Length: 439
Ligand code: GAP
Image 1: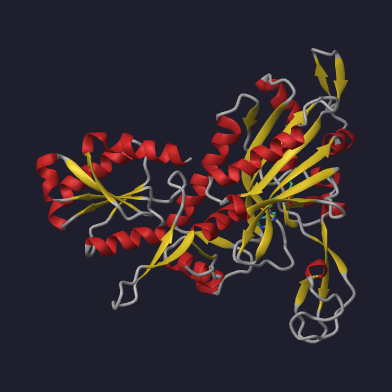
Image 2 (image 1 turned 135 degrees about the horizontal axis):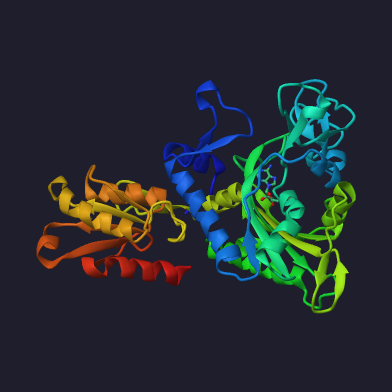
């Protein structure tokens, strides 16, 4: 019906317990967010799907889970101590702080028109102290990207997994950046999760791994429910990160414009060479087939789980006008998540409370098959359907009096609102079939 307004989405996320401010009872803390019951199910489903696509269903990518805090030298070698900076300016009048490269007008304050200070470079890494003493030797950093532990573990994982190049190492984990201006809900946060994969290749390989991964990753966006017309590539020109020789973003159209959700980077031999220099460990790979020893090149795919979740929430949000002629206004809010990532996939609803025990058995059966389910007995059936629409449940299963005799339930479909009778014995395979078909 109408264009999505971020305020409506933020309000639905809070009202329904998807996402809300961290430490809310203390007034919140800027750039930090918490996921409630539906939010965490959504995010877990997204991460699981990414892991399935990137690791479990492939023979050439393995996983790892490394510590968040690493040896401080890692960040010197990676270039983050020296170069992971954003230009910061302050307004001399209203004291607002900005990232200079995001200002519409570099001369005047965006808020009050006041004079701005000269830009200062501000390092985005968050630091902490390790151990009891607090001197510079005990300073450590919360990782600003998960990638570096994949580079430092490259040799160990290559040897233990016996993978031959080309192969990848994937990881999902928290990253931290002391962003100057966190904004647009969870889009730019100070604590977030990344899903990254480093693909190690022979620099003389004839295959264009960069193009292959760009296309593969773009297709992933459609599989999680981002419409084709809201996805595009953005090629990097001058704005290349310090480690990249080539880069493109996969952007999604948000209500606040086209924005990066994933980066595809050709990191060349930059990181492994740096770690070889700083650690004095040999990072070269010996290729049995060609009898050559070389530092592999790396193609990286890097996506934020929170940013992707936000993109999915924005694209799923719909308000439909179901008002009948001459009737009271009837607006239906419906989150059109793909069924494989919906926080609740099947809601089981006994028509009346008296049927709860039998209906509960249907829910237990569906849980055993691995579906994310919810059981709701409160209120009229129509109201319960609408509640499920708002959290994006694709299938509602109603247990009524006829079920006792014919062992069939009614499935109500979220998007079409159509209904169909299905035998309980076929229910799980029927729903599974629909989920897989839509993936
Ligand atoms: N290892 C490469 C790397 O970290 P990046 O472009 O800086 O590259 C990759 O980040 C992805 O991480 C981004 O596309 C975005 O999805 C996510 N991301 C980065 N900074 C973020 C932030 N402040 N809040 C939420 N997500 C962020």
